[in-house]
Image (cartoon, one colour):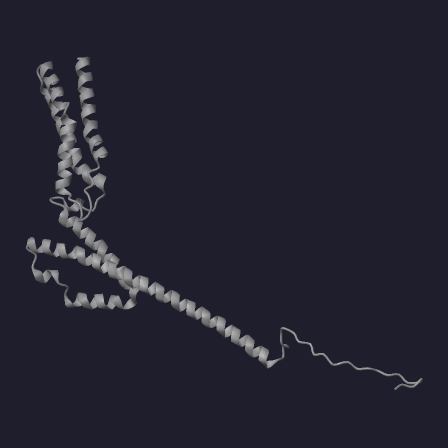
Length: 238
């Protein structure tokens, strides 16, 4: 009930504001922030550990493959050296060598993998030396310079004979005969060089011998063509 000189005030229910964030001074908010930071840090550590473990596994697998490849190459080399009369004691590492190798292996799987790859490279070089018959110094050369040692002398042999025959010939018939003999000379020289390369420089296991046929044919053909052209021009001028 109200009087004429009075007023009535109706008070509604008090509403509380709820927000998505807690006040900055709230200890619960600080604890939640610390928890999120620790979770992110832990996740980063977990990812780094997983990456390192995966890399370690790949390195170990690669080292095992390299070790298998080195053993595969060393076995026939050992048999070959024994056939050549090398004492078995010389084919076994000495205690100081074993100690040095053990010390080098303490650097982890990466160091072991690098050492095995270096050993594989040395095994390849040993294959070249053992395979080369009579020319071990050229076993490490690339194919063209190595094959030039065979194609070159064979390609020059008959042209030199033609020059000597022309200089000492008493008649043109002998010079013409020397030219006719020299016509098939490049093919003969190339064939002999082809066989000699395969004989003196056999390939490694699982590979094919690189005879560089185009290069060999060019080496055998150019001297013969030049000498034949020179002799013909000399005969025409005479």
